[in-house]
Length: 217
Image (cartoon, rainbow, N blue to C red; front, side):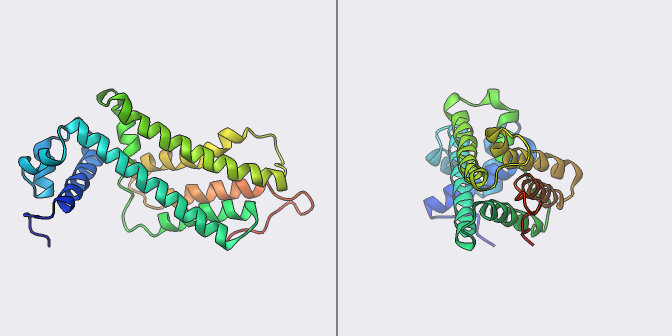
């Protein structure tokens, strides 16, 4: 186990961010005090204020880190999907399947989404912090819409569909599933909801001559 005294400043900063994220997901931002953060991180208040001028500054740094990790996560999985198939529909299905696989491998129910925690207490954050959430959400929309438009160009949808709303669907489903998972303590919910979306997209874009598209097993 790490000693409470961590001499590496960058490592201590990460410990403080990790501690703050865990506490915010469990108790919310308002109920998370600086004392609680430094206690969980094994830090001192001096160390805290060396890295963060205030609790608000911590909140901004934390959501920026979370957004960067979310972006890297999406880009890595999208790159894998594109390497596995040149077909745009299969790429989207593979992308969702990779997330589904990750959700299914979790040993415990997902702790929650930091973005959702911030939105629940949006009045506690300044506009620049909330803009990070908005930018991250819009990035998901742009990436998914670009992929889905390529799918629709090759496989016209079997029902009329608004592409922007469809692009938001994975993000919307997972955010809702985070809440249900935390409420019910059922770690299988995220994976099962991702599979429903995958099934829906297979049906929506099924080639007309066959009625089905080869599934991702």
